[in-house]
Image (cartoon, rainbow, N blue to C red; front, side, top):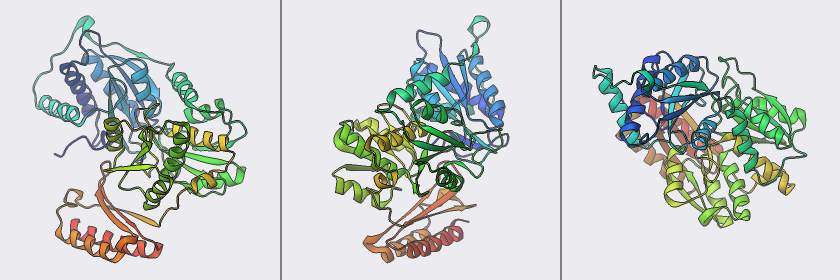
Length: 452
C-alpha cells in the first residue's frame, strides 16, 4: 500500500478508497500523535471540523467527529465552509487541530481529509507520516488508550463560523468594491454562500451561478475547472469581472469583462504590483511554482519583482514563504496565498483583493492582467499509467530531451505525477501554440506507452 497522504491530504473515492473506517481511524491517530507531540499539554484539546457539500461528506464528517471525540477531543462542527475558513477558524478560535473534508476540484464521487495544526497551518510531512504509521499500527490490532467518563470529547455545532469568516475577509480589504458588478461561480461547492455574501458586504453588485449545491453537483461543468458558463454570464450581465472557485474554495480564477480567462499567474502578477505599491510585498518577492508560465517570470523581471520558484503544490509554496518571510505566493491553478491574512490558499480572499485592485485603480481587469503576456502553454493529463515511474523511465527521459532540443530557449517541458490524482501531467510551453500542442501530444503518447 502506498503513502496515504498526498500533497493535499488523503484523497480517494468516498466509501471505496476513503471509507468511514479510514476517516475514523486517521482522526483517532491524529489526536494521539498530536497529543504525544505535546500539542494538547495542560488543557482539554479542541478541534474544528468542516466540510464541502459532497453527499459523502455527511458520513465522513460523522466518522471524523466520532474518532476525535472518542480520543478525548472536543469538537466544534462548523458545517459547510471553505477550506481556508476552517484554517482561519482553527487559528482564530485557538483550536489545537482543524479537519477539512473535501476533494477540492476533484469530481463528486471523490472526497478527502486534510488536517490543520494549531494556528491553521498545514501539518508537517513528519507529522503526517507519524499519523499514518500510528493508524496502520492500530488498524492491525494494537489497542488504543481510550478515555472514559468525563474524559471523552464533547461535540457542538459552531454556528458563528460563517459570519466570523466573512467579517475577517471584509476586514482584510484595502478598499470597498462599490460600483463593481461581479459574477461569482461557486462550483456548487463550499463557497456558494460565503463568496456572494462577502462580495455583497464589500459593496459589489453580485450575480451568482453555481451556488446551489445539492451534494451531487459539486464541480460539475462549473467552477474554476469549467469557465465556460462564467464567461457567458459575465458578458451577458455586462459585469466588470467574474470569479470562479473550486469545490473547497481554496483557489480562484477570474474572467475579465470580455469573457477572457485571467489565470493564477496573472492574478499573482496583479496582486504583486498592488502589494509592492502598498509596501506589503516583503523582500519585493513573489513565490510561484515551476508550472508558472514563462510570461509570468518575464513580467516580474521587467517590473523588478524577484521570483522564487518551488515544486508544484501550494504546500511547497507555503513552506518557502514561511521559511523566508515572503508575503505572496501561489500557483497558476489559482491557489494564491497572502500570508499576512491567510495560512492557505483562499479563493474568496483572492477574488476580493483582485476586485479591490480594479475598484481602486479604475482600470479594467483586462488592462491590469495585461502586465504579463502568457506564452502558449499546453497541459495534457495522462491517466491510467504508473505515475511512480515518471522519474525512472529511460524512454521517457529520451523523449523529454528530444523535445527540449526542439524547443530550444523559446520553450520548456515539464512532466510530473499528480499529488492529488492518479495521473501524469505533461506541460509544454512554446512561442507557437501549434508547436506546443504537437510536442505535448507526442510526449503524452510516450508517457502512455512507457508507463501504461
